[in-house]
Length: 500
Image (cartoon, rainbow, N blue to C red; front, side, top):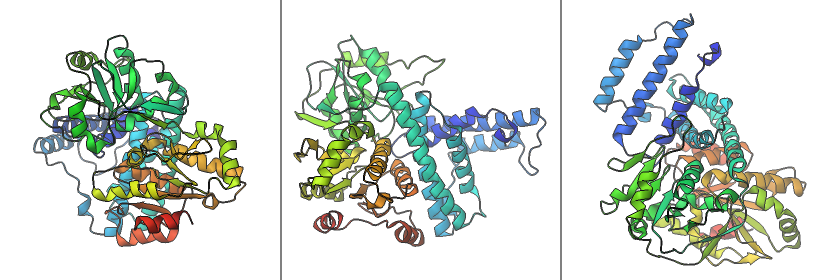
């Protein structure tokens, strides 16, 4: 209503993507921070209402008095009873689609916040987020309306990923093929995890010349691919693997760890005092570094001084891994790739993007990669790559058999690559390309990637290790019948299916 009447609502836009990001999988476990965010939301809502009234705009009849509304909300927060349960929806198909839409918007919020931190915004994306959230509260909404909104969510998922891609590349240059050290040096160090590149930039600037090295962890690995970060001699390499191994690896790292976003795991007491959070992340008892104010950078001095007092990391592996194959780099290799396909040297590309997790069933992806024929190439993004990015899979005519595009949000690069190959090979349908999709999912950002791919017309995507539990039988059937969505099976059978 505010935007309809030209009343500024930037605070509401920012609140929505920040609040959604905060509640994404494994981002924030700090009750106080979440309660404060709810209070902030109430204040944003009441300020908008007051602005409407001050501008002579009638509030819809039946809307509660703001003073009463606020008082009841504040009491609910105090009692920790401000809960909106999706299980209140009795129709399982409506419930399933509302969850699918909610998780898609949460993933969208993560990318919107990263772009916002770099100064890039999109009012149309924010407007859709508001629209989608309102739809999830409706009791009269139909299945058809929700299906349409879910596909629209995929469209805006593509838009927000494109926005973030532009924000990252305009700010730090296009990722380029890079060998990343996985060993250690003898200096004290900070391990940075999560996804936010603005935090990475500010940490590197503030640690420069201090004698403190910086290592990436998990989804921060792709920071090494950006030209702007390569000038820092103390930006040493990547330490460890996917998020779920952090308890063991943080013990041996010895220095402080900075979480910029998800994926934090409740830390052990033995290293909890070395864990710092910032942005959307949080954990009760860990030091939280405040957000930027008045255009000034975050202050990382406390974690830097902490690092100086601690020993250097304990080495857990040596060698290098290669990455940096986002769309710009791959398109520079397009002639080489096309020649390899035309000559038969490359028979198939396998998109194996997504999330990793601790369940034993995810060993499937390592075995799948190992058993792929030598004439196949894996396109990956997200922490799923840790299941196979250190395997000796070799190359095809100088093209590595694992092409890592970057973080989960860099799945956009994989879509750009596919669309470009479609153009190069003069095909009418993206599904005619020699590309198969075997994607691992875990959290909400994987949902928005899936919806984006569906919007782009990609079919026959396989999801594992299990299909999302929030898909009702009818919703799952729609996805199967209309888009060819399927689960995974036995490795040998799936390899044969995908490379046929």
